[in-house]
Length: 285
Image 1 (cartoon, rainbow, N blue to C red):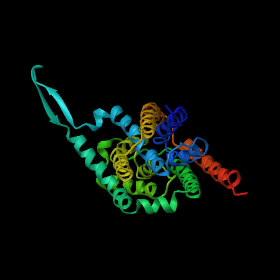
Image 2: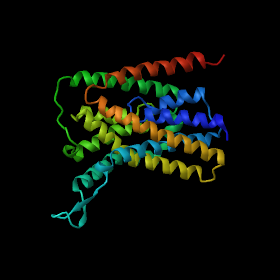
Image 3: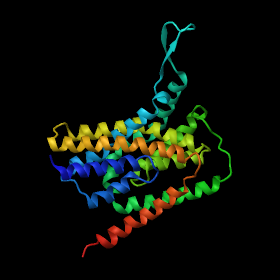
């Protein structure tokens, strides 16, 4: 077994599981981590790997929120005898809203994803996006301080509202470093959605987005994996799943008592650190 690659895959999985859900940009952290613990794999495999391990993070959402996202319900008879399977219409409506929110990023991403990666997947863009959305978090939270949210439950989300949240997600699809969760949470807060509902809807919105992105990456790469590549992918995905279970629970507890400004400051500091690292440490001699 290639223990070095196995350990590096473990680290990538932890970073993915943590940064995918906190609004601090998984892309920015992956770029930095790859500078210090570079996997001994091809560029094509790594490009696929950093996307597909998100499936582990997604499965954590499915496990933790199963009762909220699975539309079938088992109901017992009036006297406890027999049972029937019924559809939960609130859950069905939620999925329609999730799909509506996915439309902007899906249309643009499918057509121009490769172009966006070529143009914007660099430390300059990522750093600027980290800083800009860090500032946005702080400004939005200051503007909303003391104001009651207009939308305090998932069932209160309207189709125009979720479409606008999807438009904010589109920003993250175009500019790496924005953070998909960061963009959708900022957008939701601006639209009057409570922090708890904004976080939950962001989790659910990630399910079709990440499944779709992972499928496209796998199809593009192909299925001819070496044993080492399968090992790396398996460890990274499993670790992302386990770390996501912990961080999602933490975030849902955090947003009930705190605002998102701490993440804004963290993004600003990280953006400055990425810029400094590549401009000073990695600058050509």
